[in-house]
Length: 218
Image 1: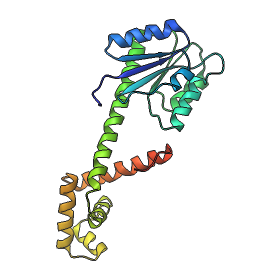
Image 2 (image 1 turned 180 degrees about the vertical axis):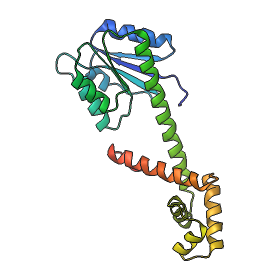
Image 3 (image 1 turned 60 degrees about the vertical axis):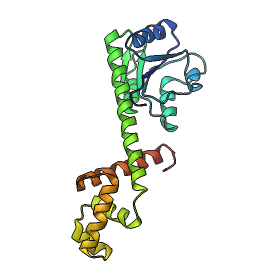
Image 4 (image 1 turned 45 degrees about the horizontal axis):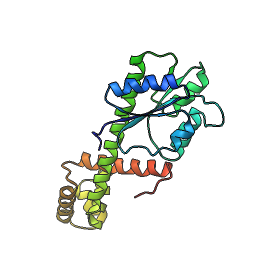
């Protein structure tokens, strides 16, 4: 799925702009979906593959602004990378958009290569995020195969403890600690203590990110 064709969502009330960007993206092999308003985009079901959102800042009528859409997506845990485009020079808006994680903020008119580079950056960011999530998901599944004792040893190893210290902490012999450690490493398909540290750290960051987005822990 991570190598699937990327999707570029283009949200701009100017038909010439969204058609022009859409044509550029199609020429570079991306799937393209066009929207005249943020309301139209919010009604869309996003693809499961890597994607990028090209988003105008201002919209007529009651549709949410680009910044409001960015905020709403963040609050609902939709991590799609955003490339902002704008026909108005507004430093405050551009600074806020970038602080909130936008890939780029391009004033109109922009060069074709500028928008293509920004979109490519956004898609690559999304692809890497999905790969990280896949890796964490796989790791969590392997962790589920561990016994309670093996999980305890995994966490103690992540704290930097060696076999002798782990044995003392758990009240077992060093030989027993080493046996459980070896089984744990084999089940997790890890080869060194530093890999255990990285695994536990990635899982903790994943839990924190889910909690911040209001998503379930599992």
